[in-house]
Image (cartoon, rainbow, N blue to C red; front, side):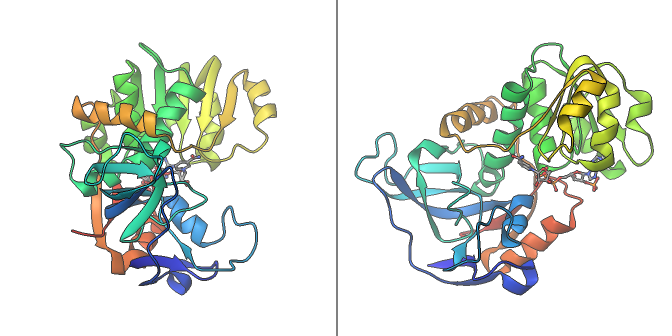
Amino acid sequence: MKAAVINQYGQVSDVVTVTDIPVPAVGPQDVLIEVHAAGVNPVDHLIVKGFMASGELSQPLAIGSEVAGVVAAIGDAVTGFSVGDEVFARVDPRVGGAFAEYVSVHTALVAAKPKELSFEEAAALPLVALTAWQALTEQAKVGAGTRVLIHGGAGGVGSAAIQIAKHLGAEVVATASADSVDTVRALGADQVIDYRAEQFDEVLSDLDVVLDTIGGETQELSFRVLKSGGTLVSIVPIPDAEAKAARWNVDARSFYMRPHGEQLARLAALVESRQLQPIVERVFPLDETADALLKVERGGARGKTVIGVRS
Ligand SMILES: NC(=O)c1ccc[n+]([C@@H]2O[C@H](COP(=O)([O-])OP(=O)(O)OC[C@H]3O[C@@H](n4cnc5c(N)ncnc54)[C@H](OP(=O)(O)O)[C@@H]3O)[C@@H](O)[C@H]2O)c1
């Protein structure tokens, strides 16, 4: 089968190739997914560069973090999925392999694909929607009336987080670039701040929760807009988190999302009730995986970049 692989860690344009590799083995608890589309995320170009690596590669590594497709085979112990089912999943980050014609995924990570979504749309959701869900419901306790600031509202995680926070009953402020303000408002944000034209820390205060998807100065300034006892949840590292939390009297926590089939099924139900909609910015063919990764690496996302494997 065709798959995007790396033989060594390095820059995307130097090491990512699309080549023939064997169809992956199917363990007793796995489903083999015939991939129709795979979402591209910043973590993918970071993995190419060696993020999370424990040493040099001893064999080719198939890359890709999330997938939508059709079940082509099931392991001996699988219940709940059958050949022909349309599914989507955030694949195990230690295994990867979504930018390929087939990927093998443990059933605990898989959910039925929402019927109203195309494969490209469904592939754009698992990683960002699970990240947003875990940030807002597990790391912070967002509920009715919670005042939340979401940074990077036009990006993958931010666009999912706005919709999920509104579903949870929150009052949502989001930051975005000028050309994304209308899109971000249409996702449900009650207030959108064009962060290049306006300093968010000068116009906001006393927020319950900030979801930081950016880091750096944006993260530093976010401490100032929280109320005492508020929560800064970040999906990028927080340097000196404990000291800053104590100084501002807030809870400051960063975390790494985990794949989760049952949560993904709940998010699929939000899609079906029209409370969550992926935004696909651009679809690349599998042969152009390196270009798709470079686009995500350049930033300025307006939704998700997707690899169309069978479209
Ligand atoms: N910890 C985890 O589990 C986890 C999970 C997913 C992602 N992440 C990380 O979280 C980060 C965001 O991921 P993503 O998928 O949402 O990225 P993305 O799709 O590239 O979106 C980032 C968005 O932020 C905007 N932006 C850039 N600078 C900004 C600023 N100063 N203020 C407000 N918005 C700004 C960008 O557009 P403009 O530049 O045009 O404004 C873009 O729309 C990445 O570093 C990723 O690796 C971590």
